[in-house]
Length: 413
Length: 121
Image 1 (tube, rainbow over the protein chains, first blue to last red):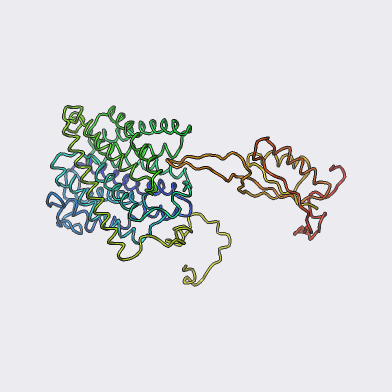
Image 2: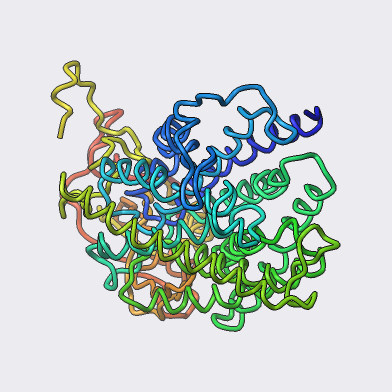
């Protein structure tokens, strides 16, 4: 084992861990104030649910030796996951680092169903989804599964994390349906500063997400970290230009979205392409997602926080451009520009497989959970806001007129 | 006594307060409110969502004044709050049946600011 590697992956685990609270702020700022806590809780609660599912079951399904499709049960309840080396770091640390990925991935899905999903069914969904969708797809790409054998490149999880979550998000938005007032009232972000704060923290955490995916304190980790800094800069710049061209204003939510799209797009490519190509990739990635968001918001699809155009389209574009720009001298295998056009096809197969499996499995999971109770809150609860309806709390309250009740039962509403 | 209620642009609040204090009109209440007075709508863009803001932020001033101060207060607000564009706001002057000052129990003219004093006009 290598001390520097261990130190870096511990730090990187902390950085990726921070991305889930960061996402809570990013998503929380984009919703109306009556749903602020509910939306932020959807991210934070992923710690509680996915963290436990990962340790007990999902890690084994993703990374224990198995077949081409799913890992085995050897590491159930961390059996055999100890301080012995896996690569150059302790197996236990590898498990925890991968766990932080599972948590943020499940939390990403929530953006499509904010302001209108009951919390209990949501928790059930992300628990089952982590074990039955995230774990197998992670196994395909990283755990010795068929996509890894095929040579699909996914440095830090463009397909496993972003395409996978976006497919689930799209299906969840369709199954649960649009918000009651969708298409009639403009649901404006209640705190754009929260959105910018979340964006900054996501970017910071993403250095651990991509840089740590080298699983060592190596030159490739440095490349991945540097590309993670460079690419979103270009995406943000192009996004500002597109925004100015369309509306005549440089919007803050637009800039924040551009940065996130750039981060998504560089994720599969981070440790495989040159920094100048990362700049190019970042700039190119802005356009499809930007167009996607415009189309999405004029459609009947209430993917409320644009998970599909941002993470889905951005993830697909990133995965395909990885096949274009990957270069042997930068740690990958040669892609299209290196004279290997077949790599783009391999990338496309990986993306299509993740999209299809995640969409179908998420649909079945939601229908299954729907058998045990409504996925949606009552119309009244949705109208009043899910902060009160689901949590019995409010994100913003003056406290005026709050009379102390000594018997807690009376507060039940 | 009269109650002068003025609805003004938020960005004009400082100018209006200055004008009122200069005119010796003290004792007022302000509140933030929203209104629509036929002005051109502001357009905001959040990602793909374009929203027309039909309600605009306004400030409501409520000023209780004695009879001689009605015109002074009205003119002060009018001069300070005017830009000439649609959306400058309104001033309502309504009669008041009774006014008490809570601290002293003083009634009517004694209770509103300012009572007539030498040199104030």
